[in-house]
Image (cartoon, rainbow over all chains, first blue to last red; front, side, top):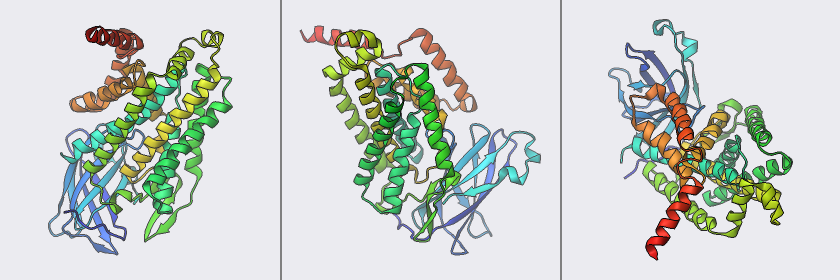
Length: 124
Length: 299
């Protein structure tokens, strides 16, 4: 049985940090609904490049709820290349929804990646 | 079926519509780098009809198909005197003009507390038809595959008509076709219009599946890929472009080790295949040979 569809919009805010593995990032996403954190969510994260839709299919990964941080979920994702990626969050629980953010991943020294390079743009 | 497999297969089916639209233009001897424009028009029309006006999905699909076809006809009519390289450049310009125009249009709307509508580079969000109608990814995959199969069956029968034979002659030798009383311009117009309809329909499904579209998605890379799929697969039959899609997304996608080098591998593969099979894998010659074999067996 599928979950109900939410009438109001859920907001997301993503932050990513590079790991030691090439093109692999440790990310956290904060989900908010009416200013309150969304808890107990079942999330699958997909990533694709807006400049090349349908061609890049990074394997979706589940996002796990973080302890002591309501509404925050973490996941590790391996991308195919640097550039602008769109993360899509498919929510199955507590309601069915989809939201996304565009994030720019640039090359260079990962430890010196500036926040503006990782700036997010919410589209849902 | 996992989300990953279902999404990848849906993407294969969706991009097949674009590859088939490029195929229809190639049949009449033209090369289009602008099929992504009609795909984008279809996507935006369906997004507008379903997300803003709350229209029925069948109406949205129908309007997207018509809009894609009309836009393609407009392009064909404007550049009817151009062919070859000039047509290719004109089609690319048309697609880029549309993409840049979409980047400028900002009419965001608030519907049920959600921002939707055309919002320039931010795109068109909250196309929620699949959620409102409780469509799972696998359900959408089935819908897309059924639509693609229906299109392939239509094209299969269309291949056997004199219209297609004449169109292929126009594509091969327009002067010879003209000397036989065929009007190449009419065939070009009709096939480019038809290609726009196919791309528009595919774009409509893409918008419904993706739930968010933006001008950047309909850039030149998408058009180049669609063209490459048809050229790799061959112009002998509608199955050709699908073979091209299968090689890129199906084969290369499965070789995860290639990952960041995939585009280089794809470019290299296109070059090698075109050297070995200049007419594509399923060239008209190969198709004729296969048909002759099947015919002999039946007899």
